[in-house]
Image (cartoon, rainbow, N blue to C red; front, side, top):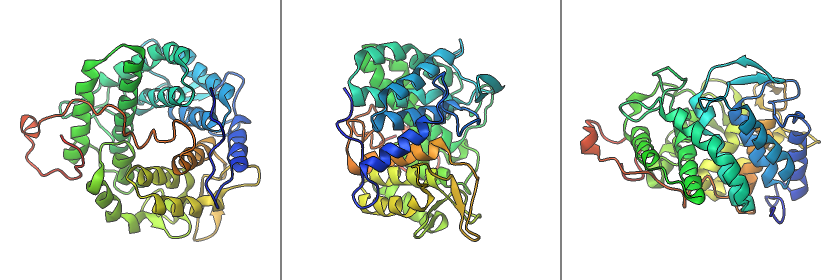
Length: 359
């Protein structure tokens, strides 16, 4: 089974244009199935999976499945992946926990999209090993260390892991291998994200730390809307998109599209569509997207057109248009929420800074 048609956002991006973007990603795919940031660039496990999701959403299922096979084949015995690989050679062997969890999102997305049970069964051992590796680094408060062996935790990375774990639990139920210990770990992580900002390194100048608790599903409802309103003017540039950092005149396509997905997840569809339209200035004729624009001097920076920027565009287009069966994976309405953590049991002393769901 494949999507009946590619996503399209009326008045902004046609189905043919979405397919052109997917093909621009596929052109950079290596014979091994790996998808680097750009031709000759490095592969990281997170952006590789995001690109596979985009390929599948646009109907390029064979290319997407080749990418997932690369992930399955290159996973290390401990369940992790190297942070950077260039043309098959490991150039950074560190294991980023967020990177190692994200395969769960891609696999569940592909199952929703295709209904392919054999794919789910084939990929499940890799997803399970990846999540088990990540949970080795969960701290007492529920946060998960950034790198294997490191105690420091990142709000953005842990928010993404939160979403990955929800997808992993959905896949576990699908294949009939319930993981109750993951339910507790997810509950603890969500609680940390909502009530313990002190558990994470301060990266507040980055827009991802602003919207990722919403994108990752830990914060919802009015608290999520309030969180996005609070720093909207710090990060959003009217008519251009979202900044990567609050102190630089630099809008970036991927962050803009992730903010679009965050807005869509909480029902702010009109604002999401406006933002999606605003970032189309980064599009090239062949369907690829520049990574960003320094708007004070009109220069594209970085100079590459990155696969993951195009991928974020496709996923945002699918969410806005509700085209494929996997279109609402970031809304996450049907994903497991984990075991609720009692705030008193955690001995929380401060007020929740961004609640939205229990715990």
